Image 1 (cartoon, rainbow, N blue to C red):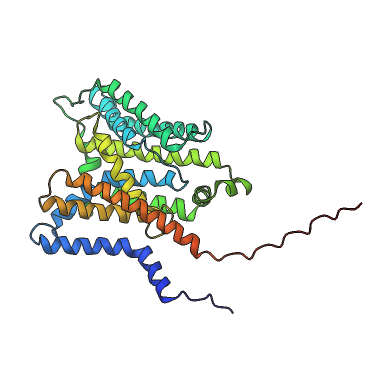
Image 2 (tube, rainbow, N blue to C red):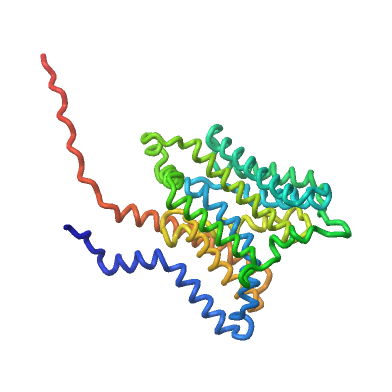
Length: 346
């Protein structure tokens, strides 16, 4: 029985750092802020508030992870989030729809938007950045048309308690919204890591030409990835409506950058070099710990976008470095012998 060659100590340390480095950073950040703010930071109330406040960005980051697995980017998720939460408020607070039906329609609407994005990208052959930025602008226009540029405020009776409990209730002492994040992470992990669909998405993302040669219908699976992203965006919109209880036509744009920071930073950990659900969750935890800490330290209002933007640059740089490092570490195949040239007979 032959044993696989052991990695050199330096390479083994680099591998462990790539897999668990971000998780270790989360622990170090929490320890540092706990020492700096011992009376307010390491408390159950603060942890509960952080979990609750960061649940919607986490859900949106998980939604962005699905197309990234195919090397596509959905820049419409922020605009889609704004439209989804506005539509939920419109249907429940203004049109008096039963809230379960309104939520279902919003989630299905997110799937339709995702399918449209996927078809524009794959069948119109438009780059995903440009295509989803264009569809996002259309979604923003629809949001403005629905709200006429004003907020949607519920009547004197407010929203149904069962609807707001989707966000406000607790489960096992934790905010139920945090439980949604854990459940969604588990479902995406199962989809991407254990089911054939996830393997197909990864193959398409790493080498679409090779995926076509082995018979994978790349266009269909890319559309599926965008549909999955749209469904998650619809769910996030429902949660945002239950949280804010007011329809704000411009609120979705605030979630776009944190979502991509979490998704791209997550691709540098747990499974370095590829988008993965657990890595995205770890990245969101790091962002949540950092944002809560700098907020409690009394940072100015511009510190949060500065933190998000700098972290995005670091995430993109680390993702590129990890991908290049994996390519360098792959064993090189011996060069194939070229066939002899045909003999020319006179």
